Image 1 (cartoon, rainbow, N blue to C red):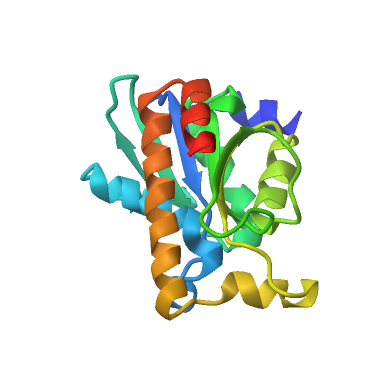
Image 2: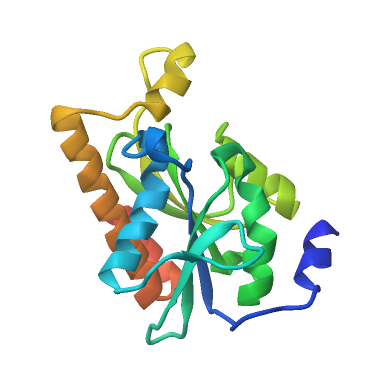
Amino acid sequence: MALRRFLDSDRRGSASTLLIVGLANPGSDYEGSRHNVGGDAVRLVAQRRAARLTLESRQRALSATVATERGPVTLAVPTTFMNESGAALPPLLRRTSVKDLHRLVIVHDELDLEPGRLQLKLGGGLAGHNGLRSIAHTLGTNDFSRLRIGIGKPKSKEQGADHVLQRPTGARKVALAEAVAAAADAIEMVLDYEFEDAQQRVNRS
């Protein structure tokens, strides 16, 4: 019901064929952290496509629309903190006219995947991810697409928060940058291919 209410509200802006949202915490304190890889990957795609992510009036995300052969695609990074990511979705969905949530792709870090592994999927659980939980609560459903970027698990569950917020150094920093670049490549596949084709290409690599 909540989803229908905000999707049926007056739309402002141009329609997009896809909405791709990279999750991250805002501010310099979180730059380069494992938790920010989703936002970093979307920013990298925008850079590759010579698109500038900007904050529009009444929006709670930086966004840009890029042209593709399959139509315009909106890239976005919420300006909220991770556990409030859902607040950015209603304005974005209204502006882009994306009503089929299969056309909404959330790009996020994933503890349950080994570092650097990528998985493109439709729906599924939340795996304790606060950003996904916030989005699912706002939309009233888990039935949206995700690009999961593996960051691996810490040695103990109690170290989970420190692990995701940590900014790796040395070889781990290089590996994280490589994972972000690979995730950006995967997003490019989503832009250029139908979801099922992109899924096969991403998940088998």
